[in-house]
Length: 441
Image (cartoon, rainbow, N blue to C red; front, side):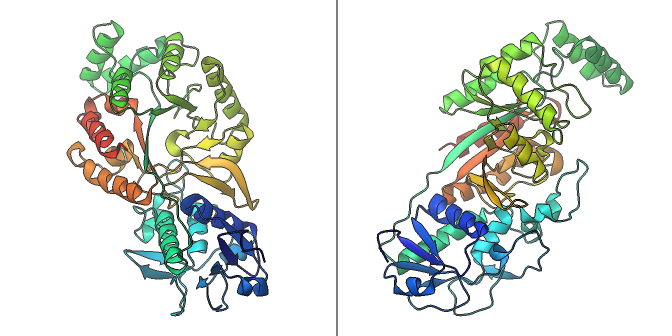
């Protein structure tokens, strides 16, 4: 065997697409180790370099991880998953064998979490039909706040280097990407006559006279629209030399889709101006989540305004249904999606803080769709968890620290309206300033 073919040889009796996928993610992308998978035991035993044995058979001179069987399966099956205490959390797919190097099958565990395997199984849906965070293994076992896949990869890499000093690991650079969703570009302006009149009547009916007065002042030009925070957003990011990413809801009016009409000239001018200092993606509407044709219309409309291809997205309401949502995106030439995170809880829905390729579990193929997981959303803290602005950074800092340690990308999700510093968002503009200061590279 030519020892120059790879730095690391991995032995497994059966080579399946799941194993190829997770080995590529862990070794190539997270650790930067060149590797080769083989199923020839004799060839593996004769190899003189770094060796990892992914089988139940003990093989001298190699690091051993015993398979739990998930990577050899086909189809989606319910599993009774065993857990083991590992460092500061419980790790799934425990292996009860004292002689192995890891007390759990970190490859099966990583694949299960990254592929979102549990979201293909029967689960409890929340009020918007989404996979409930309460159903997640990481929430139930208390490790949602940890990018466990990055952690496990680093631990494995360190063990490999200790055992085989000729190996070298890459040092991943921490990055910070601030992202902004535009669900409503303005609170009062450019909504159209009927919506504006309806807003007045709603304010009167609910006796919200403060809203009625502010709406009147904005529409008569006596006050700035509270959601018009775009100059502030520009200033804050330029001060720290960061290019944010905007996701624009560019769709027809609906129960859960209430942005400005797409043919409004002021709205189109705003979107074009954002492109001068930020990247722009589509915020697919609630209505288009299960409608491929409607999604195509929204993307084409935004593309025509910007005169460029739209290749990035984040689902409105973070409404993610696997595999349909991602398949619809791929069919519409979206290459990068930023929806991977829970609305109700901060942390790492896919157990990872690095970009990864989506694995279509039903088709058993690695796709070309890049998934960019986010860690924190303004609405999660304010609306779901009822966190006061003065305490918000207590939840944000530990997540930044985790990502920085892992050499991942910290992605924040904010909204232009949460920087308005009015009503329920009073004080949250300072939270965002503190977040930018703490998370910058």
